[in-house]
Length: 635
Ligand code: NAP
Figure 1 (tube, rainbow, N blue to C red):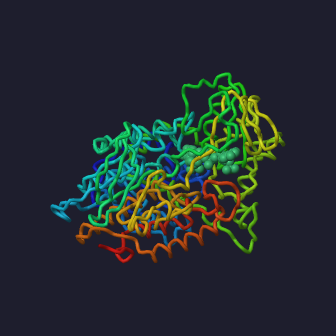
Figure 2: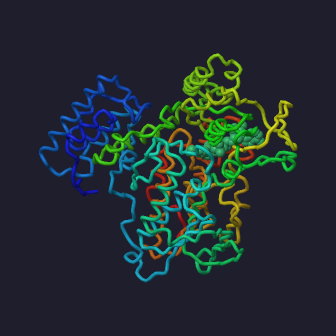
Figure 3: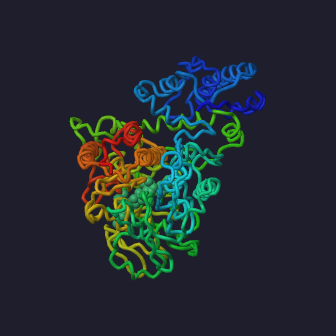
């Protein structure tokens, strides 16, 4: 990073939009431009829980803005070049100022998270031709979701031939499959973005179609579409010990099988793409339409219908309120109540002035992103960590977890108000952090209070022609059944048949406990890399896109290692894998999701978590920073 910023807007243009600036990002920008961290005054220190907002009283925020703009005006008047690289000490000062002592020891995480517009720090700085001129080397990527497209870009940047297989007809993975009403991200859009490919997002938490357009645009702009074989599923992949390649068998829509060899196989199939519909006795007898949130049947008109919604996870909390606005009657069947994270801006658009600042004021967007990212990536791991002396219960796993429970319970009870029946039903009976805490702007409880909505607690025991039966013995009459019942998240890489060294079948080896070092590599399966693999999901302590970028960087470095050394394959050492697995298992047991026995997709059928990352985010950054040759048997 050594380039300079070509130009700034005039100070008048910036001042005209001053009221729309977030004070923390503005002060960080000014600290960068001036190189003077004294603008990060104690009295303007933000509340980390509220970032990117400051939480300052309006008059104090205005004073901070006025000072920042005066400093910016003076700096711009000097007309000195401003480097995109932060002056020495600025990022560290920003970390301490915005996070206090939690920022100690995470300078490298802050540095990795700060990506100014126009910079792609993790792009490979080498090409195949430079490292291994004339060598035949190619890569197969499975899936065109966020990770598949990212892996593809990295291969393109390195000049490595690659093919992406996509079973569908559209890029975007989960964002092309889930089209249910009001589907949107529940991660701030500005950090649900490739760090090096920023976007002028119209809302704080964008809708599915907007995210899909972003991913399509990314694929088009980077020339990735011509590498994609749409309508082609990878059915199997087998390691060939003689040629040190993967024989990848694909099936197209005419059921034609093709087998092609590749030096490297990258699985980017995602975790949440295989809908889970519970095995409900008698469901086949139900006379009306019944479908899953990820397979929304838009031909079914819900207007005037009696609708049964099964499930109260992140998907149902988005589609059920929209359905309630058009259906005659909605019965929501809740097996466990969701914890809700108050997020007033969840369905709000970003104002024109704020969008202008993010797009046109250099560095501001990068610091805005950093200020969202930092508190979330440091997160609340401590609040979901089990204190064995507390002692942990299904109410709370530690004093800090109990504190979080109180805050979240207050939010629910306040909304239930006079409705004591609801209050009883909507407060979860498991510790916060045991499963995803769903974002909410007041819409959920308001929906439950509607005259045409009824919340029924319990599971579903069976179905018949006219509806479903709940575990409470109630028959719910319905014209349509909507399943918001989640995904088979623990069944990684299914239904592909992956055969490694000595004919070992990956799924037989895993059983129900999928595992991979850093979620990426598996012993006995050389040159196979997983993106968003086992134990790389996050609940309150990270940012998924950042993790995906770490994984892609690791794969790039592994390929560099192969090419530079003239190696044919790399196979994770079994002892490295076992030590890593022991640590993951031990730490998972000490997190709320590992401890609690509540139902959750964070568990497999026997209650072990092969899904969640149980350690601090910086541990993942360090673990994926470079492909260390000593961890691998290299051929
Ligand atoms: P989910 O979180 O797994 O929720 C499934 C729901 O169905 C739960 O309420 C579950 O109850 C219920 N359920 C499952 N089987 C049942 C049965 N046999 N009887 C009654 N209820 C049953 O699934 P999801 O809502 O699709 O979300 C999955 C994940 O996708 C989320 O956690 C999130 O990571 C991601 N997601 C993200 C977004 C976004 O960014 N906007 C939106 C949607 C989803 P229990 O809780 O008792 O198991």
